[in-house]
Image (tube, rainbow, N blue to C red; front, side, top):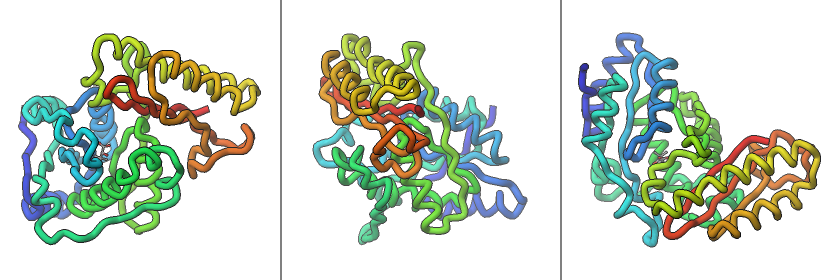
Length: 282
Ligand code: PAF
């Protein structure tokens, strides 16, 4: 097996990417914060089908975490990640340090609007989408991909990045990839590692409620009634609920009726110290 090239500076990455381009090879980028799981591997496998070359970035981006969040404790498993990426036969691992990504004097930040101000994740993590948009835009200019793959699990993030690429005329196609789940429905996430056994047993309630709510809305039940039932079930299971909402799937704007299709149901809730998010289509 050929180990992927690990690059840590922008000029080194550029040299590799420029050489691919000269040969006419297409490039797919899979941006990650590491601690890779089967969800990331699904992105990588689709990336391999889309493009001749696959670049995976591993960068725990400090600017998308608030001071009270889990930046310091976020799982970092570079050696295990590298082994997984070697097995997936990817070409390049782009692993810059924070000083390479944000050198002394760095002073620019992208502040997305639209879906980034939908009152969902942005309400609870106001710093988040500015940090994500800025780093993702940099990753795009650094790796110059034809395609970039993002999981639907972070649905609002996917919408924000899709809009950003469109608004800034970035020459990259954003590809959303369906959420990969455990057998009991829990969406895979690097943060699932924080769950105690008891919390892990409770966690699938989020997906159960999303699925049941989507089915009831499809059958014609009133959206607010369905959501209230879902909210109560999640709270009864021991979660502190941030939101369970039905939104227009593209704009993420609130919907006045179930006829405003396509609809996406989105949830975020905290159990113990762990905050989980999930979503489904109606
Ligand atoms: O979804 C993630 O892992 C991160 O938000 C991303 C897109 C890699 C940006 O840091």
